[in-house]
Every structure is written in structure tokens, then in C-alpha cells.
Image (cartoon, rainbow, N blue to C red):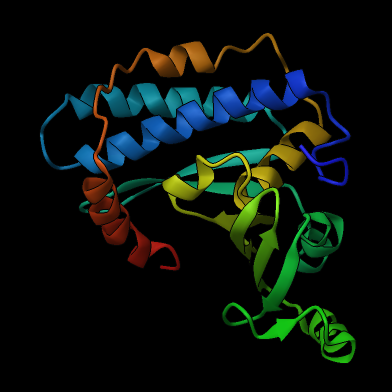
Amino acid sequence: MANNDILSEFSSSDVNHFKKDFMQIIKVSAEIDRHYGEAKHDLNTFIPKFERLVLEFNRKYKGVKLRMKKGIDYFTARVFVNEKSIKELFANSASRIAGLKSVGISNFNQVGIGDAEKFAVFLDSLLDKVYVSYVDPESGTSTLTAIYDKSQRMVEIIFSPAEMLQENSASFRICAYYALKQGFNKKIEIYGDASTFGFSSLLNELEKREWFDRFNPRFLE
């Protein structure tokens, strides 16, 4: 982890602790979503159990909140971080991730950070949404989409499971930063309980692409 990374202020053990908890719960939610409506598992049992686990996760990590969204054919996790506005999210965390390349308010790559004048105008124009792109020699390429949710009074991180399960992604690092910034209760067990769901699916790359292509269109609904 680079020294200028936003997670460098936290111990490696704490970062790894959150990583295990968070990624396991994202994996379970993604598997439940994939099987939702397919009757491959007893989802009537799994979903209440998972919703209880989400409540425990939210008790453990005060800076990050998970909310579940159900539809006719999906059951997805929404992730919120405890920030009061998009401007503050960008100033306090998103702008501090190495490799910041470009930003936008309606799509990616609208303003490159090399154009100081346009970048300053962009910062003043930030309201309820931001799109950020990163390119870094160590972390590779990554993007971040964040929306302020008035009902939750928090910022929602829009993500795909594949992206969130990459520890170098901007989405994961933002979530880890807010989770660890406010401290957490190590006595609450998440990883072990999330591992008991027993999903055995290991999707091949084609299946993953097909699944995430299906998943992507509803991100901004």
C-alpha cells in the first residue's frame, strides 16, 4: 500500500479486518442476487439471515452503512459512507486517492486535473453526484461514482461487485477509509457468520461478464 494512500493512516491489521468482513458480505449479497428468483437455494431462509448480518455489520462499522434493495428479479446491496455532501467526499477522500486523472458531474472524463482553471470551476459546481477516474502505476485504473442521498443523509457509492472485490479499487478504498476512520467494534463477528452461507459458485470469466452486464444497468435506478 502506497504511503500516500488514504488507508496508510490505519494499521494493516485493521485494513485487513475490514477487507475480510466487507468483501465476504459483498460476495454473499452478490450470490443471493444472482440466485434471486432462480429457486436454486432456499432464499426465504437466506435473505432474513443475511438481513440480520447486515444489521450487525452496520453496528460494527459506524462510518459505512449497507442497505438492501429488492426488486422483482434482484436483491442488491447499496453502500453508503458517512459524509455530509459530495463536495466533502471529494475533498476528504476521493481527491486523496493516488492517480486522480479526471472528474465529471454527469459522466467520466469531463475535466482533466491538468486544467487548473476548469478543475476549480468543477469543484464549485459539485452538487449531488460525481464521477472520478484514476490511473496509478501501483493500483492500475479505477473509477468512482458517488451520489448524495437526501433520504439517508449520506453519500452512496455506486459499484459493481467485481469492482468492490478489488482492494485497489477506488470504491473499496473509499469504503474502508470511512469504516476505519470512525473506528469499529472488533467483538462483532461478520466474516465467520458470512462464511456460513455456503455458496459454492465459482463463476468462470464468461459467466462473470454476463452477470455483471446484467447487473450494471440498474446501478443508477
